[in-house]
Amino acid sequence: MKVIDHEKIEATAVQQEGAAGCRIRCLIGEPDGAPSFSMRQFEVAAGGYTPRHSHGHEHEVFVLEGTGVVLEGDTEHSLRSGTVVFIPPHQVHQFRNTGSVALKFLCLIPHPLRGMSGTCTAACGCQ
Image: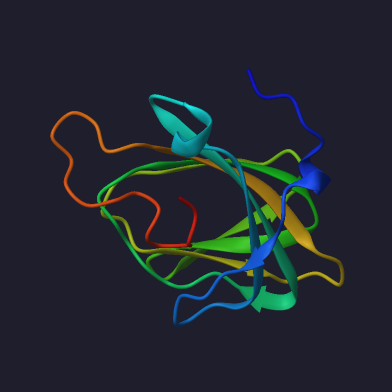
């Protein structure tokens, strides 16, 4: 079992090309013995964004605070505290902060299961 205040987990800058003002905390993952999925917290500064990308795994997202948009291809969907987002595999997406305070959200991804190839963590740097 892992029980820890999320602020004790280091937030690191997302290094992928196309990201700006974006930090990630790897809250729970394979190094913790989680067999099926990882939980990450993203913090996107005002005016910042995640890389525009797609990959072979799904995302489940819950917005904790702030405002922004998530791009589904070229379509923008508004985000605010309490918004839930499901991003299917292979869908181009990007999160952008459109507000004046940090956009914070939880993002859950599966580990490579059921014949998936490649890592699920490469897009934003968690292990």
